Length: 176
Image 1 (cartoon, rainbow, N blue to C red):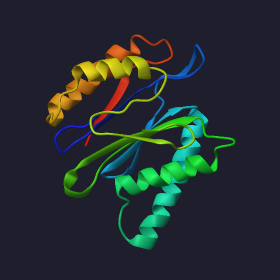
Image 2 (cartoon, rainbow, N blue to C red; image 1 turned 90 degrees about the horizontal axis):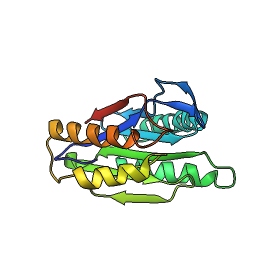
Image 3 (cartoon, helix red, strand yellow; image 1 turned 45 degrees about the horizontal axis):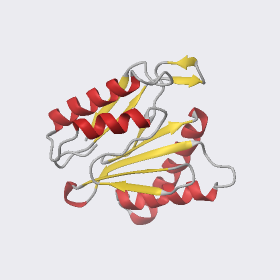
């Protein structure tokens, strides 16, 4: 979700196989650099593998260009990596959030073959996406300050995962 010169990225903590919970502290939000984060919902092993490939490609970019990747460029990289595997895809739905030039927030999400969905307010993915859309639509206001954005995202996440039996076990909210 986007605020005034800031963004929030959040996820639940559950790792499960269908209705069986495996872990309650699984990380789904990963840092690429200080102003860029990616959230990977979906199959846990594919999320970890995709994250490792993305970190590798970002480090190569840093060596070649001597700067960090812009969020728009990183979104195109993620889309290309996912599209490469379209016949045997990574079962992940990435959410990319970052601050671009002049601290302008950028958010987008993709399906498992890299089709981007850009938004100006919020994006969601995962098993609770239907209830997340409803909660975010009802709670979102433009130009929220970081404290208000944190409260809004936290309430939307908790109210949505309560309605989904495949999500839960707490939440993780990051404000940048």
